[in-house]
Length: 122
Image (cartoon, one colour):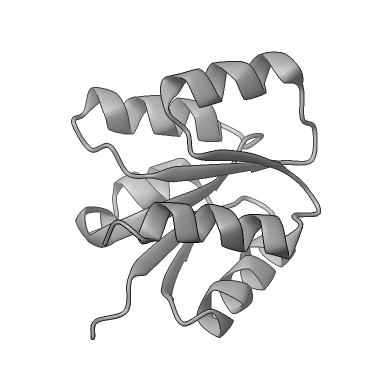
């Protein structure tokens, strides 16, 4: 069985690496990107089964990245993570179709539940 690809877009190297380790420990294959632009330019974009993106990044935020993908006709199930959660962003992201909006440091059990909800469809 082919491993599902989870793409992580996170400007903080420490968070990006720890998220990558967690995804691999759960049996997923992982591609990690330091910015939305790097992810959008990636040949792995089309194979991504789930996107985990930081909300607060320079140039393009996680929410902007998600909306860009939707507008481009590439609706990838997305989990947003943020160290600065607020109800307005959360409500907006969830109404746009984001699967989960999680506070950092991310609760691993909550993240795993989100991933299972997204990836059970594959």
